[in-house]
Length: 233
Ligand SMILES: N[C@@H](CCC(=O)N[C@@H](CS)C(=O)NCC(=O)O)C(=O)O
Image (cartoon, rainbow, N blue to C red; front, side, top):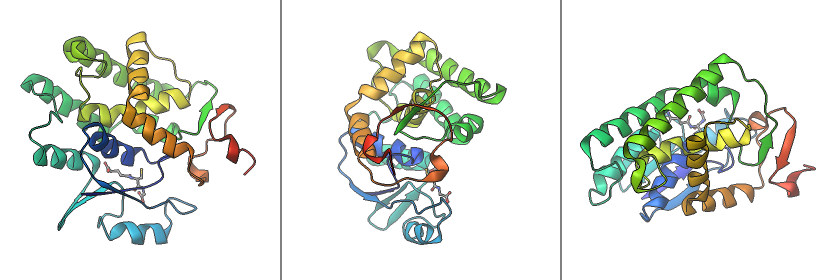
């Protein structure tokens, strides 16, 4: 299998299936197509369309089969690896995991638009408005419900790491990058995401990337710059 992704610093949708495959030690070849100077760069689109006619990343290519849309890719991974608990084994937990993964896939646009994923910086806290606050409240309610109902076997939403955690990992990074404080259960969950070896490996590679995409560099005070070698770029 080949997974087509973009910049690890910025591409939150790429992170999701990459994390899932890596967390479950499923072998795959990574094909990283770096963004152009803007997100609508026609050369980038053309290269991506070879793998996904919709012209977006991530895309998974398995022989002749092209799979795109992050949630669809996760279902394909679950289909091809029934021996692995990609989704929770318990039916009610699995239903909840799919509910919240679909909510993530389709929603939280206020948070996503106001706080684009950028693993390279931590910004100062600020009031980001009621729509972002509502998204954060819903996400943390989801995390608290999953942890309280099914989380006793480990630090992730359903105890062990599942596709639902892969879907929400980029939200943990946004909370951290934009200094959005949340309740202790949600903070502990973010810690668990940041400590997962697959995420550690993605973040390390992200911080070593040489590229800067101005659209995802928020024009806000920076508390920490994790790419000091690019500080003067
Ligand atoms: N709903 C899609 C979203 C994919 C997406 O928007 N990916 C971004 C990169 S993180 C992208 O390809 N942007 C370029 C574009 O939309 O032209 C999914 O779940 O995979």
